[in-house]
Image 1 (cartoon, rainbow, N blue to C red):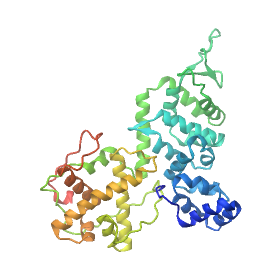
Image 2: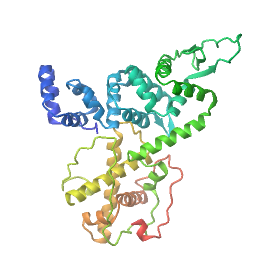
Image 3: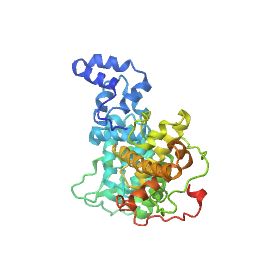
Image 4: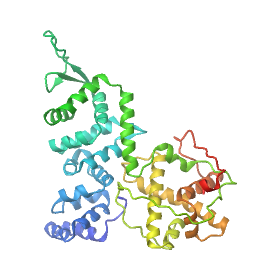
Length: 400
């Protein structure tokens, strides 16, 4: 997750060895299997991953295997201006995820961040630009073009027509004029040059879209495409996610299922690296201590449910999904409030923690814990959730 203060022991040994004998460090890195090298990279703090990757015999085999968010975190740690060598070996799915996770702010495409990622893709070479052009939604590129340039199409049959002042063209038909006088559009023109050579119809479509399409409609389509992909990665829509902050009255806070609930949490292609949780009975949060009391297979299901809850927290709190610190923050918040809810229900129903965990969803536990803290004046929902969801608490089966 890129949040450990120190690399795992094996990675630490390799990095320390590299200070004295780089070739010996390369040999030590090569002693690990490809899967083990991927694990070492992902469990090493993001600030030191590039050092470890530099010791790998074939980074081009490791980089495509990194979970997409981990690639995004690593690129940030390197600096997007210097991340071309990473992105050169990334898959189309990884490049798309980098944009989905990091180039949006408050539910809208962030044009500045898109521009920075475009520069990083360009640094990775023509093949990377080509891959990114087809992987990332055309609507996102259209919005970036709209933000940076005016596009003028040469009229057909007008021999007296003259190009606009400052206009730059690739094909003699479409002319781009910077919206900012000091901007020379180098990366944008490089991007369009690659499209013109390799994907002409996408090139034509983008430039026509800048001329004719409305930014608001383009944003809406971009939001829809991104939303679907984020759901596939376990991030729910905002309206669904903010349900974790729904009001619970005191009379309904202790509702719980009469019997153990049988439910399954489907696996999803998690965007982050998730090593095994060191679950023990001595852990700080009662939720984790309850996990320790479950059989191994049941524990795995509950851990996936917990990760799903953390994703809901990240979305509801509008945390930056491309930031390496977001997951630890959302995990900690999910654990805190779910543990408070678990403790309350255990006391109310005289249940052992694992049994209570079986009879209430972790989202329910979070809501109970959060409402208890809010009633005590120690918690408030995020400020951006202006219309806090209200729910009908009359159905015992539904709420438990």
